[in-house]
Length: 172
Picture (tube, rainbow, N blue to C red):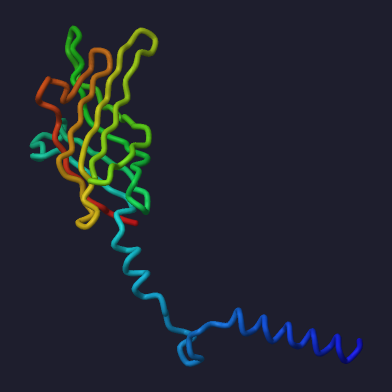
């Protein structure tokens, strides 16, 4: 290796070390330098949420459990699942436990979201409607409504009287 090639290799290595080295002082290597960024990330609305009917049902049969995830940026609601009992109008009438999911819902800039899952399958009509308002700063959902009707089973489906629910973040 010629002296010129060796000098060029050393210069390139020194330049690479200068460009990739940390601007933090040597004594601060073990400390976290991006503390404000970590705090900003923890303030985001993203994470797991749980909700329940408002006002709370007094009977265990009437309980309503809602679970969903909000993306980090707070613009989408995914994996929305409600577990509840629904009254089925047949002879004799009966109560059925329902576990219903919803497709991904978009959250508007003002925090409102709305999802409608409706159609007909095997001659049975179904309609599930969900609304709510995501408050990113308080990490909770307010003004939530739910309307469920599948075939002869329904809950919160009376016009003007949907189920009301609220939720809060339970984890990241």
